Length: 308
Image (cartoon, rainbow, N blue to C red):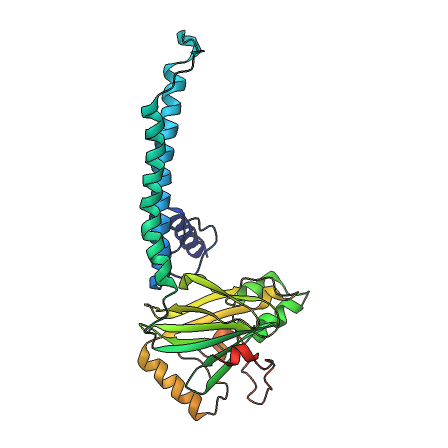
């Protein structure tokens, strides 16, 4: 127990350092931005660090000058304040040009990276994401595979049980952040997402992927990702979409391409019957197996969303 607590404190301390950044999910007391596991996340991290170090440099110069002036020209040493006003054209030019140069240094790379974040060309597959109260529907376009993902049953049972103990909550891994059907995607593959909603505005957000996108009824928004590292990456709806907004998690499982192809083939062969995601079992997640006969709760997509 002590070793586990020590490890958590070490991770938190590293995450708080300017040069340290976690690859995947945020941790308690994390202060710095995470690197993420995609090119978009890495671009955002690099832009963040550039702006951070420029601000640190400005802060060091400004506070050093303030400290020097307060110490060198203090009243106890007989310093007398200057009551005259002296204009210096050189200083005016200097403190105008320097901020402009710094802004250009930050803006040029940030703009180039922002443009690349919206470039969905040359994607190898497309996944349609539809937000509903309070679940997500995923369609692998062109593959005939569709899944619905909602809060896992054990988390749902615990959140509704007012007598649930702290030990019960801590014993359930990823409480309120687990789902019954994960979104399975291949690694090292450029994946295009088209995102919409069937009822109210939602927002699809997985921090490790480095972006989020609003899901708006009647509107199709786009995004893309290329996950470099296999793993499980968790997120949530980032838009206040109703009273159960906090119980609409997202789980993305990235697996090697061969494993994804096998999973996709099994879904097709099973006629889209619920199946365990690669590398996991329902028992491992602490959830009950999904009922193959359970009817879909997702409403039919809007005309605009169906036209994708």
